[in-house]
Image (cartoon, rainbow, N blue to C red):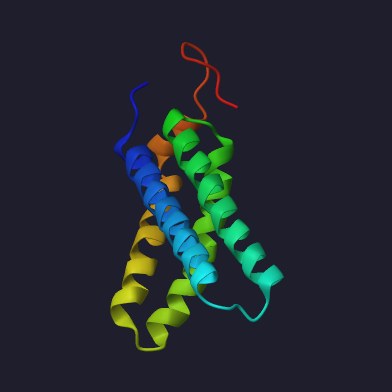
Length: 131
């Protein structure tokens, strides 16, 4: 079975989101090193959390591209979390950042449940087994 375009789009969006988290984490560490934080423990925790989320999302995107079925649930949950940030941002008057955070998750949510993406992640027989 060939890889559907929906899988490629979903994996690309997840990759971009994970890269954004990793960049924000790096900027957070630079800011942590150049200024005095209010809470050193909290700041370190936030940096570790950003890097962990970035690496985890990178793994989800890569494994979705390979066709593992568990990745749909992880991608779905992450996109719902993105929507909970995007909608208040959009409603607070920040149109461009709100749309940039709203459109990709909506596209991924629609594509995750398209028949071709579901079939690709549920395939059996012939190819390598999907988890």
